Image (cartoon, rainbow, N blue to C red; front, side, top):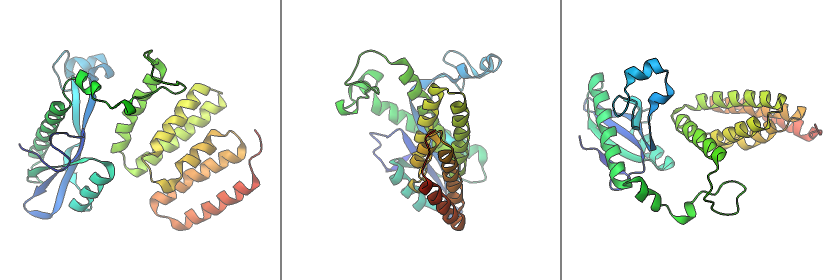
Amino acid sequence: MDIQFEIGDPSRPRGHALLYFRVDTEPDNVYGTYIVTLPITADLTKYVPPFLAAHLGSGDTGPLTNFAAFAMPPMSELVEGGYDRLVRLANLRSDDLVYGGNMFSYDLARMMESVAAAVQEYSDAWNQASGSAGSAASSIPAGDTAIPLGASGPSSEPVASDESDADGLGVNEVLWSFMSEGDRLAEMGRLLGRLRFAQEGNDNAAIGDITAEMTALGRHLPAEFSIATLVANASDTGPVAAQLAQLYMDRCYRLSSGDTEQVRRIDEAIRNLETRGRPNS
């Protein structure tokens, strides 16, 4: 198949794209999915039980070895809001927007095959543009070089713990991008519970990791949710701050559901608590 770039440069794919199809019998509808190409090829058989890994392939064979690109969902789904929403999302997220052609919405097997073919074509374009790992690394602008926290400049010494944390957050960033807003809020609530448990156990390492994860997850939620304030209060072990953190969490849920009256009441409760100040813990 020949995919068509409607937003983005086919000679320089961004590595992530909204892919959509049209249906002749449904002129007002579009069916879409999201393509991700991984900058680091992974052998996912390492992360499944050995008895499953044997059936999923080893070496250079199997569906989970040399895993470098995928679409989620694996079959294109009806997009609420149609083509205009895809354009807005692509511009908002700096994604490529790719057209995969026409298909039949009732032919599920053909739909999955079309998505798989588009993923392969997009991945091939990405690989061709990025070149080898060495040339890709040498093309990174100097200003984009990462500097470990606490360092005054670039260092040739590896920082194992920082690298592991970055890898973990990178995986989570991909997962969060596929979640609905409600699922992201549920994940934030789970992290808030883990943070409180870590605080009770005085586990400073876990506290730092969880607050960093909450902050990163907050970037996938609307600014009006005030996640930075939620995290700041959650990081404070004082009793008033704990109440504020829960109120901000509840406020997020109410904002997501569109319950403006409850949001107003929660805002009033937050103001009342904040005027009382935060006693030293």
